Amino acid sequence: MKIRGVLCVLLWCLVAESAMAGLQSDYMRGVFSGDLAFMTTLPDDDRASPLYQRFQSRFVERQTPENWADIDDDFVYRAALHYRDYWVAALLNPAEHDQAEQALRQAIQTLIIDGGESAGDGDPLDQLQTSIRARGWGFQGGRTPPLQDFMLWRNDELMAFEVELHDTVQAVQVHMMDDFISQGWANFATFGHSGTGGWADREALYCMRDSYDLQSERFLVSYLKHEGRHFADFIRFPELKSADLEYRAKLTELIFAEQTLHALLQQFSDHANMQSTAPHALANAYLLDRMQQALVDIGSLDESDIAANWWQNVPADAIEQVARQLLDEHEAALENDGAMTTHGVLEPEG
Image 1 (cartoon, rainbow, N blue to C red):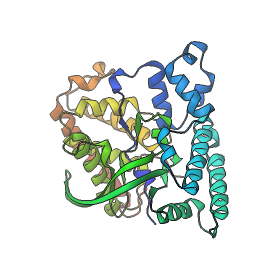
Image 2 (image 1 turned 60 degrees about the horizontal axis):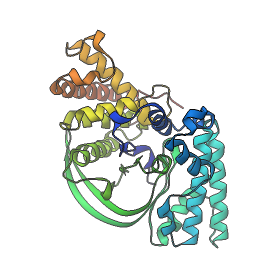
Image 3 (image 1 turned 90 degrees about the vertical axis):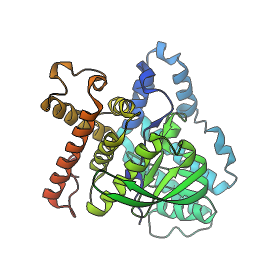
């Protein structure tokens, strides 16, 4: 069975991170931590903002994205609505994620039965994937932590790449997908400003072609090398959990990034949360904490200068050096823990 949601690139963003402030910044951080409950208790001043009005339309009135009207198959459209209701319930009530997911499974099982198909004994969400693909759609479900996802598209072209990593060259097959109808829960929750740019499973990489300039660092580094690192790690560390996988992929980005280096560090900082259960937020927090200490240790950063945007005054070659060092140290820790069985060293067991 393919696994994919835990390995997604979630954090492409159309809003300039440096321009994010106040409610908008809190909102984006809440999305990627899977918790928008605070939006229901905002003071009156914030409720007058355009962001709150969009939130009200999508999460209270439950208006769907405009292009969902292009779903011309009633079965697929009803499935999309069930996911919408699940995303709303889970994001507004983070303590009840499990209950919301169970309600989603029950709704999808009923949809499958009503559609004249056998419910079977397997996971209804896996069965849904089979049913939607049989109708001629490109579809991928699975978990993009912390939520189950619903990716729906029309076109797919397979391409081959050789991805140079810091320690190997990884051959990968990439499904270049376009004509998307649904780009997942993060895209839904941020009104199209952020979302999944692609993912990896044990067989291939998957890329939203329309999200990238294929000559840009955003594609060549933040997609291809990031996901290539995942692909290589699936082989070397087959049981590795999400936070460790993302930590390694983000360090890989910092090794190779040039024009986008500071923007990446800004993005990691804006979406870092050491208390989060979301792997991207947790990986960002570990990465920044360890990178700061390593830069202090080699004399490239003064401890008293650690503040917002501290990376602006650190030479790019020092950041690359430390990223390589941290990746090698993490790899040694995984090897020591047992490469074929380790779940990782960042997130707790359970």
